[in-house]
Each structure stands twice: as structure tokens, then as C-alpha cells.
Amino acid sequence: MHNVLSKSSRAVQEALEQKGLTCKVVELTSSTRTANDAAATIGCEVGQIVKSLLFRTKQTNLPVLILVSGKNRVDEKAIELVIGEKIEKADAAFTREITGFAIGGIPPVGHSQKIEHVFIDQDLFCYETVWAAAGTPFAVFSMPSTALAKVSDGKILAINQKNITI
Image 1 (cartoon, helix red, strand yellow):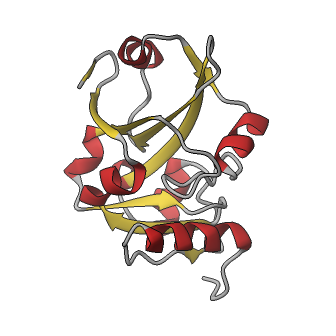
Image 2 (image 1 turned 90 degrees about the vertical axis):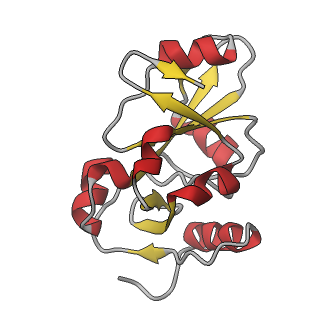
């Protein structure tokens, strides 16, 4: 674990503090790029990992951020029904432009631009504590799952392989 935070991780720490949270960003020596990597490195369940996945709407080119439990997959068709437009996975350039972070280190907070469409996987609330990326593939922070909606301004959805309900 490093004591001095990188520029990206410092930005996440500051964003958390601005939201009134006392979470502490830590940088690790092992990668947390994937949910399985993160769970193994941190020593928690895969379901406790918050995957911050950025999509874009195909017609209007708006960002869509989905905070999903590490054990789940996003049903893109169901998200499309909720927002009323087709979506596609955002590429690296769009992701960096919107969030300010690279894929593999996207946090649920502290983005370069405001993201109007933010959805939170209800399954994350099965855990008292969740872990999220903090700006790099080696940085994370833990927080109470109940604080996710506060930091992200997201809408909570019940995400299932084939079903999403609001």
C-alpha cells in the first residue's frame, strides 16, 4: 500500500470529501482492474465490488453510468427500455473525456462531466460495505453501500440477468 496518492486518486479522495464522506482512498500493489482481481486483492466477496461501467446512448451520444455488483452482468436491453434509447459500451476516449479516468479505474464519483443517467445495481445493497475503484486500476475505497446513491445521484435498479425493474 502506498502512502502518497496519485493525481487521479487524490481527485477521487477530494470528491468523496466534498460529498461529506470520510472514506479513505488506498493504492495497492496488486491490480484491481477487474472485479475478480479487486476481490482477490482486497479480500472481499466479488459481489462487494462496484463495477463502474460507462455506456453511451447511440442516438444522442449521452453517457450512461451503471454501478453494478461485481457478480452481475449488465442487461443492456433492459437499460435501453428504462432510458428509451439504445446504448453501447463507451470506448476509452469517450470514457476518459466524460469521467476523467481510464477504464479499469472509474470511480462512482468525481467525474469530469455531470452524468445524467446513473443507475445502481440493487444487489450492492446486500452488503454493508462495498469497494469501488478510485481513479486507477490500483486504487480503491470502501464505503457503506447505503452511501452509493448519495455520492452518485443514481437511481437504484433491481438488475437480474434478464430483468430490470425500478
